[in-house]
Length: 434
Image 1: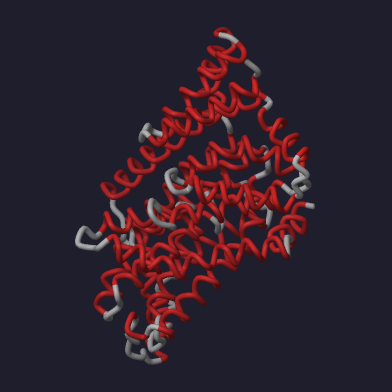
Image 2 (image 1 turned 180 degrees about the horizontal axis):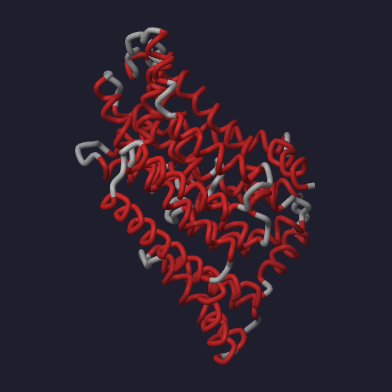
């Protein structure tokens, strides 16, 4: 049996394990180990199994993950995110759909600090949903806004998904963060347009909130200054070349802790709870990445990506046809696999194919994140939808499904814009890093 055939069997086994609800890390590890054994023998398989944990844990670029997770946990526990939402709510008072817009904007800003979509969706559910229910918003529209806003958290820098992509694709993380800035802002604007359009077409879904006075609006701007300062220091430091991503994450974590104590929003038990939560989350992520590295090593051994390139060229498929098939595959995979798992499973297979057809790996990283976002919010399995429902047990899941449907238009529009105007993602990285 050829190595490529073993690779195809390995991929089928991987998806079979995932469909059987095996943990992602276990499925990747088993297929990677036994695949390496089938292609290269026991000695080589055990050698890769023995070195992968150390290589992953000692990879400097991945140290950014626990630090940004810690920033997100502290920001959530100190209610910095609540200040952000309240400021947006007051500024947009009187606008039909204003609370939906406030939720999306606050979620984008919160995601710009914590880098996690699931954490953003969970946090905004606790903060925004009670306010929208109190204002007379339909559950479907409210939860759709929260799910859409939460998905922005993995596109706007710092993005944990982009850090993982950079580790797999061997691309510099600051360059990926720069590439994500304008697409992230564009997606936020598109979601806001959808929210305003839905509120105008279906006024029964969103009651207008009473107008706040201008003094009240100006006073609301004073509340989120700590959050804005945190964002400017961390992300501005990366773009300005002052910090590496890891240094920026460390500065952000320290800044969040100091602001929490100075504002009397945090105490030692709360800090310990945040540290414990970030350690648990980070350990889970690192175990998955270790399994993905085993699987990636198996894919390299099989030469399957090269075979896919040769097959696509033999079928006379053009670059656009190949990308359309890849995007369709991602949307399909998103029906049963969570975001990080999607990246770890697919990038080692698809990236060589994409680069062979002339696409920039930095540009492709943004496409990957957008389709992963789609996977997080499109029914029937979207992770963000389940996170929202889990926070509010009395919430009807069918209402969540109905609410997210109009917002699914925005990511597809952004994908189209990236094909028509690739510089939307590539201009800033070239300006900053050449």
